[in-house]
Length: 260
Image (cartoon, rainbow, N blue to C red):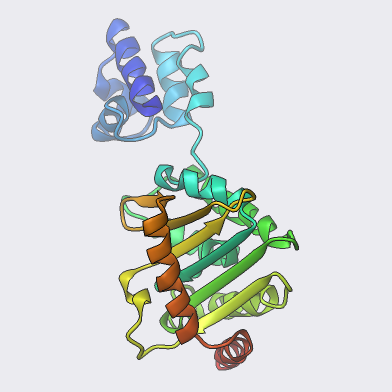
């Protein structure tokens, strides 16, 4: 809504001042379609465009003032509830079949994944979201909270970043796994598992409320319904039984790192 409102204001000021979209595009050194996408709210108006439009339309700083309301969000909107509960949870258990879990990603891994997002994120949004992901790492330092991660073997074998960066990611997993409140396990390939249905996370709040979260391409769902949480808990329990022990997992990850 902030994008749409700001874009509409740019359009109104431009038309009021008799400035064509082509002129604004030329002055801002961008394309006509780029300006159009901002004015219609499909793209977040950039600080540069706001400055150019403010000066060109003689808005007296009124357009430029919108920058405070257009700062990129640290997280995708559909994950905000999960992130909020995660920050307070006394226990977090998750399974990831495709990615290194966000709480365990190195900066290089987070940057690679966010840069690969589509449609492409602008540089500022990538920077803010990488920083937000790294900030979440501090949760693992709270020794009275427990964290359990099960990661599919294929994720650990697939170097979606340069090999040196992939090795640093594996070594980071080993280092984090040494903490008394963190358990990292590997789910071997070649197993028919409930994990094939996709990623899954379980949360326990300070009030001992049980929540389940699942995320897809375009949305994330946080469940508090007892029946759904029970189903998610049963599936996660089966995944845990099929996974290597923490000790076996550490040896497996260490071996993969040594081979790089």
